[in-house]
Amino acid sequence: MIKRIWHGWTTHANADRYEALLKEEIFPGIEAKQVPGYRGIQLLRRELADEVKFITLMEFDSLDAIKAFVGEDVTVSYVPDKAREVLAHWDSHAQHYEVREQRRY
Image (cartoon, rainbow, N blue to C red; front, side):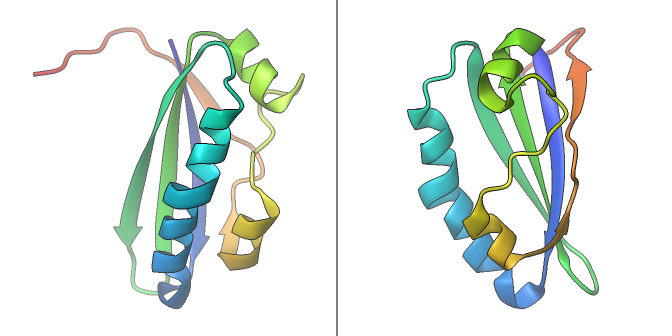
């Protein structure tokens, strides 16, 4: 299992709008692609003094599954145009980590 981690920041004024966009359009759009090996996504939000930070954690079976999602350069960020309109800045590249162990209680 591979975790794909990405960070984006927006203003306090745009934070709720961005979160709604993710939940209502972007995440369903990713799911609609039916990428083999895509296992799901988590959304994290943190209020900071000057902005709001979002983190997405995507799960894929392998790097090949990520290639099917974003292309040969698996590090390239996936930031649709509508998201770019409300984000102040974002990671241009995602990070990937191999899940070595996972425990749930």
